[in-house]
Amino acid sequence: MTGWPTATGSFELGDLPLQAGDLLRSATLRWKSHGTLSPARDNVVLYPTSYAAQHPDLEWLIGPEGVLDPARWFIVIPDMFGNGLSSSPSNTPDWPGLVTAWDNVHAQRRLLAETWGIEHLHAVYGWSMGAQQAYHWAALFPEQVARAVINCGSARTATHNRVFLKGLMAVLEAAPEHRGAGRFSAEPAAALRAFGRIYAGWALSQDFYRADLHRTALGAPDLDTFLRTDWEERFARRPAADLYAQLRTWEAGDISRDPRFGGDLARALGAITARLLLMPGETDLYFRVADNAAELPHLREAVLRPIPSVWGHRAGNPAANPADAAFLRDTVRAFLEADAQHPRGPAQGA
Image (cartoon, rainbow, N blue to C red):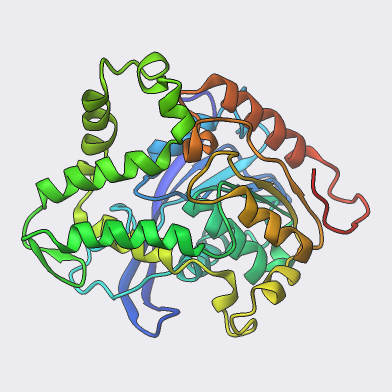
């Protein structure tokens, strides 16, 4: 139970044409909302999900004292395609080869307009793959987005990030249960154990492990227990086909793939009129501070606020890390409450 209104639902999109040219048949978006939509529909914060996450996994930051206050905002969490709740390989027999962030945000736009009549967003808030979707919203629908919080994400998946993703795909493809094209005859238990252990070396930084935080902060008695309980068991909850599909979505992340930009990332970044808060983790191995720093000169109005943390990628989703959660709360709340009418100026770093 919460102390504020919530609602859940499924939005039927019909047969959805995809960016890559295929069709997602009988597409469905699951969603959950927190708070109350204002009469003017001007208090909407869209909060897309991240890799392998479903909306309950990300609700920890919603609350009166949290990052997103449901007494102030109408917060809509659309479950990303491939996460097992919205259309996914696990519930869609003829799953197409690639569903992109572009496909997700176009579906989300229909969800907002057709369910609540929402045409304008106060902000899009996203972490990791959610940040990729937030970036797509800002680039593709600039007239509808006033602000975007890019929390541990980038406008285009970096080559080094893609190396990691291709490694994970190869682990799943090597499983004897793999039938090709990311589909499996049975859940590949051994491959998923390896998958989780590889992920653990990337999601948290070298400094995190050097400080022994897997034991002192997260309470694991030893490294093998930590790898099993926090990583192997985490990914075993999700069908391998869904994990594989979202790896493909992540790897294809690129706001400039839209026809109006023709692959020109600088042009796509320059089309963004929203105010952007870029919050990379200082020790994130996926989405580096350098990635956001390279984007900054092409943005009209953005501020770079790295999260000062040794928690790597997880600094941006610090459910078990009070110091990072406080930094996130204070920085994001100040950004969301800033006067929307203040004069616009050039992009700036800090």
